[in-house]
Structure formats: structure tokens, C-alpha cells
Length: 175
Image (cartoon, rainbow, N blue to C red):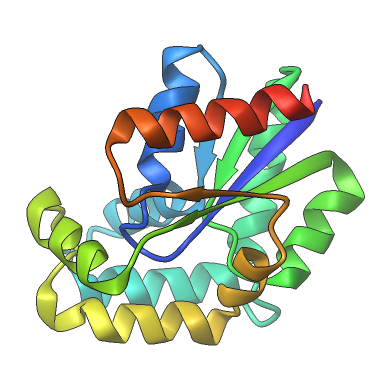
């Protein structure tokens, strides 16, 4: 199995990787999905505050609880190629690499463009007011390190087709 670990700041375009994987019937697992599932399971309103609280809870004391949860789902999939998104620290990448061969792919986009995307996607846990707090929380988790040390980059400032082509090149170089 080869696991493509998708990293990047909020609204950098990581969902392009999801669409790419799904269009090729490649399993896609995301820590954010696990967090949203838990918010719903706890009967909480799916807003930015509750999502942040549950995310912190699931990360646990070592910051890797939700990663372990999602990685166990990845390993159960038994597919040759799998995508995983939501990794925010070097320790999480190290944990994953102990279990499976992985390629870290970072999506990059300027802050202003990411904010525009946040405002246009309409998710209940997104807001302009929470944007800066969310960025700072991601950085505090250590999200900048996997981005800086990625094995491949998708500069997502052009059209979606360009980003898909860039991702496809990275995937083809590793399978």
C-alpha cells in the first residue's frame, strides 16, 4: 500500500485531492470527517467553536489520537493506493511512516485566496471571524512542518484542472 498524505492550510485546495481520489475510486480518509462525525455523534451544533473543541479532544494529550483513528481505517481498507488528509504535525507523519509507505503532498494557496474560498464554500464551521483563529490553531498543531517537508507540492492558485494535473503527476511519479 502507498498512502498519499494530503496536507495544507484550511482552504488551500485539499478537497481537490478528495475529488481526484474519488473520481479514480481511490479510498479517501480525512481527520476532519472524523471530527465532524464526532460532533454529530455528541449532538453538538456543527459550528466553528464546537468543531475546534472536539478536534482538540480527539487529538488527545499527544496530539495524535484522531490520526491513529483515521490511520486504523486506512489500514483496514487494504487498497494499494489510499489518500489521507488532515495531518498537522511531523510526529503524525512519523507515526504514519512507521505503518505504511507514504508520500506527503502539500497544497499551497495565498491567505487572501484561502479566505475567499472559506467564505464561498458555506460549511457550518467556517466563518471570516474564525479564519485567523483557525490558521493560528493549525500552526500551533504544527501544520507548517509537514507542509515544509512535503514530498510534492500543488500550488493551487490557477484553475482546478491545473491543480488536478499537478497532483496526477505527483501520484504517477510514486506508483
